[in-house]
Image 1 (cartoon, rainbow, N blue to C red):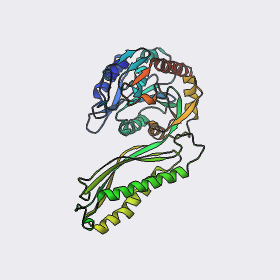
Image 2: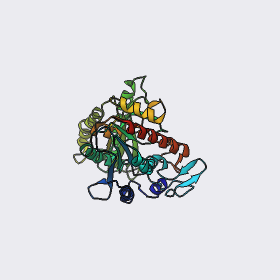
Image 3: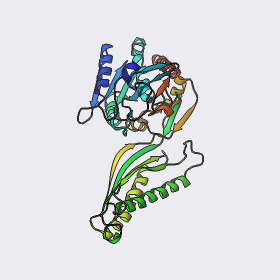
Image 4: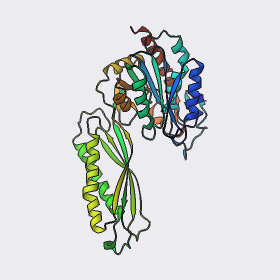
Length: 380
């Protein structure tokens, strides 16, 4: 199954429909009906399906179908063909995160043979890698379509360690529009780069403030909310005041910090400090910010039962947190079920050339699901 899923180029810029149709047909071949939740233009889709009785108290196995690009990466193997070498499987998505979905799908015959007292739900999303876009509509649909689950398992790569919290993330593009002038006549224009630099300095000060108030006992590493300006693009020549400068910036916020407050303060500085200063120099100056993506934080509150079950299924008592984002916060808030992140593979391999997953991780995830089925057979 992993070989089949890896063979689909589901880079986020591409459609994932070929993979979704394959999964739909595979499930139908086992007598399981599935439901697709398409995006607005019908080029991508989520999918959900249920094995077992349609009743409350079941398990959601959730995974995203998209992968990051391989462009410009020095691969030693074909990234779209699963390569078996020693103790590893190589291919794009082996680690992040087609293995989890492949293992669950491959075990469908086992699920069907089991005397399940509660259902196992599959939930496959699109465009996680570009901002968890598909998960919102998928979680909304699940909330109304299936009885309340007992636990949601997001199968991102954690080396089968149970994760109960992560930071949230929001990304923005802020465009500064100035007025061109010769650099010897700065009073005649407005440098977009100059004011973009002022905003970068503000974000640095804001991040330092977040660091100063962060708890020294935080389980996160780094222990504070962070802000990063990832790209800066602007200007045409050294002797011209830049007409435009564009910043891509991302905030990664602890569950205990207020994402809205950070956004409000940044926007307030842009609109009430920088924009008036630019327009005092020229009325045509402008600042526009576009929100690109929003991944809510994943909070440990309310997840005790999910953690206990996932520890029992994984055979590990370790529970941790991660600084990167997943769809867990979306499912936690929308579906309203206890949620954990737990899946095969090492996040260090994600997005890398020669991405791989250890075969031992495949075995560990399969054992996790077998224990999960044993639990589902014993429910009252």
